[in-house]
Length: 187
Image 1 (spheres, helix red, strand yellow):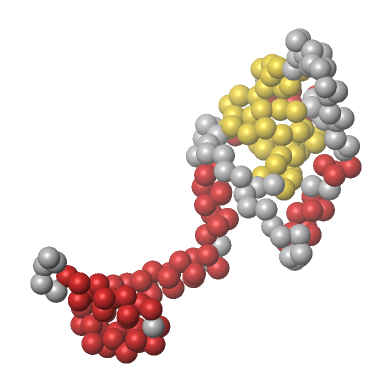
Image 2 (cartoon, rainbow, N blue to C red):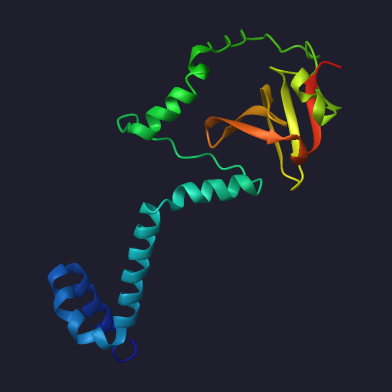
């Protein structure tokens, strides 16, 4: 035998959930028990929507990248192209010009040794302008390290081309801000 009221509550709950209009009729009766949770949910939903439109998605990826966490950004729908994605596409069009390598034939293996080896070699920061077109790794005085391509000398510094958030930017780095510089070379 079932405890008193056990079957009744399940039966009533089933009827209420089966007929959506009854939910709206019963809500005012139990409003004094659930109003705080309903209002908290609505406020939370509004905060989430507002922060999404304020750019929270971009800040999450920027924060993760700054802390060394690699998260793949979401792929935009091909049908939705706006001005910002067109600008990014102009910046990264050079990658589309390269043709992909042909796949290996069945049974064919990659070579055991690499064809050549590239390493970073430490150089003086004042000699960076001698390596125009080379790839460089720079450590700044705030201990942040970034990599890029040397474009040429600038007033008391050097111009570097680097990737940031999927785009390419040019940045002037002062010699006084550089604590260590390494240029990519064959050993």
